[in-house]
Image (cartoon, rainbow, N blue to C red):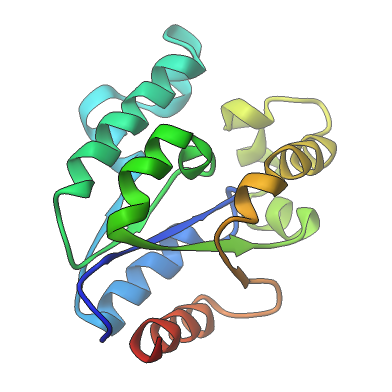
Length: 171
């Protein structure tokens, strides 16, 4: 393995960050952490945070988590979809992490998260989640383009985890 830098999986919701992260951690014998789970365990459900405190407050919680994780090594970290697009988070984690952007088409994203679940996601609370997904992907495309891209369409989570493990251990 090239080093003990953390591996960060970012990308839009429904691209496989959590599922791939768990598998990748097992393949590389590392600890897996999910930033959304870390926030929820301390502050409650994310939809509730968005509803009562707003998105800016939620983003401040993500920055706190980034500072906590920057001091650790040998982790696989699955982030919330917008976390690594925050310049403060990126500046905190980029020096100590290798960042992979998991990518999927809007159709696959909606299929993976499901129409019902989409309505429970604060950023997709819309009558037309497919259009909203496409809009958000377009808004985030420049930020996501900064990271190593891994397409997850037509691949199993294990295939994606194996692909990343190979990249990490050979580069």
